[in-house]
Length: 258
Image 1: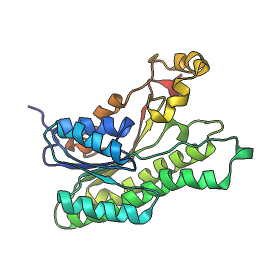
Image 2: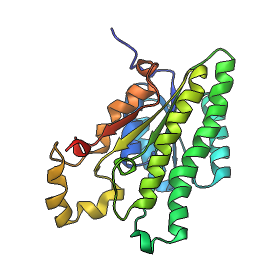
Image 3: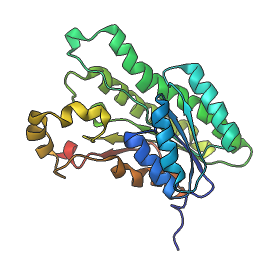
């Protein structure tokens, strides 16, 4: 039996994991045997996610963490490692939207989007790699860093330059980390979702014009769902991806190819 996708004994942390793509990824990893740590800012959603994930019979811990706050991330990572004993996969999924025409884009909004989508990823990965490098020096060289970016980081996203800039930045960040951290057995990859039905895209989902003009241009002819990201999450958390690093996985139903 082929077992590299078995995550038994591994621990995965997912930021923004209490809903949307993050929860879809956490569910798949729990179903494949991983213990899960969820970070989110909404404690009610954290509790609901914890209940849902515990149905898979694995250890689940949730914590209120704002990834745009450096100390929150430092404290949250220390607590996760203390509670779980180790971290094998860290998925930096937490993100916010925030768009406006460039001539009207305020500095405050620019910095708010970058604070979550870019600074939050930096702090999350920095704290996680300290632990993973220490493990590697002790003979346990294995770890996976994953960031959920966006196709907005590789194509022109009109009136969305702040968001697109953050997503392009984190894809570049993971390529740099892939080269830097490979000697410690740590992989770093990014995922670029297309049009996915989540809370973040609620406005587009309710727009008749968007439904008529944009979604028909998706070759798969549908919105993506959080469940569409379960397979890539399990793959990147597993030993099956031990030689796969520095890559951006585009999951968009073919939208960017059309």
